[in-house]
Image 1 (cartoon, rainbow over the protein chains, first blue to last red):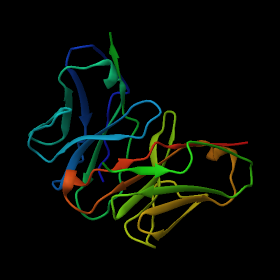
Image 2: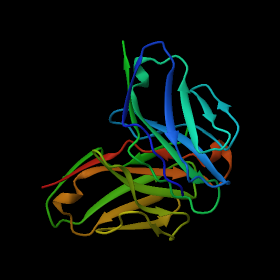
Image 3: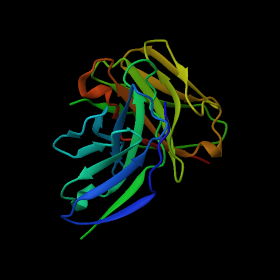
Length: 111
Length: 115
């Protein structure tokens, strides 16, 4: 599975959009981009995933560049409860089912 | 909702003890994982299993073993606990089906301290 690079930390004002970047320049054509988050003292929680099209669900939007070498997770209206560590992962949908997490981005939402 | 349950939230063990960390999932998932999480190092995969009695090494299997005798249960074993195994241990499971793109569901974690 390809590795990812994320900034170690970011701040965002409450109510504003939080845009979390991820670089995955070695991603292969059949690898998906996944995002998870981990709120303090809890296990990681799945947020969203995509292959090449932009995706949106009730939690967030995922924007993947045309060359698929980077992506951005968007939380449209950040709340204090969104303060967490956000992990970007790329992985195959089939075959080996291991998940490799990096160090993620610590997002702090500021009142 | 998928539930992944880890047997203990906090555990304190002595150096040299044999330690068992238990994980149970209730959604009939094929895949189960054990991670440890340490400050500055993120989550690191120890072992994973894609079927009963099957296991694969992750990034850091040394000092650990696993057991999967039943589909719903995946145990992590520290044969002889050492202080450098003090960490947060996270169990996860995922399905082979395409639902939610095979996203993984995590337990709440076990914070193990070896003294």
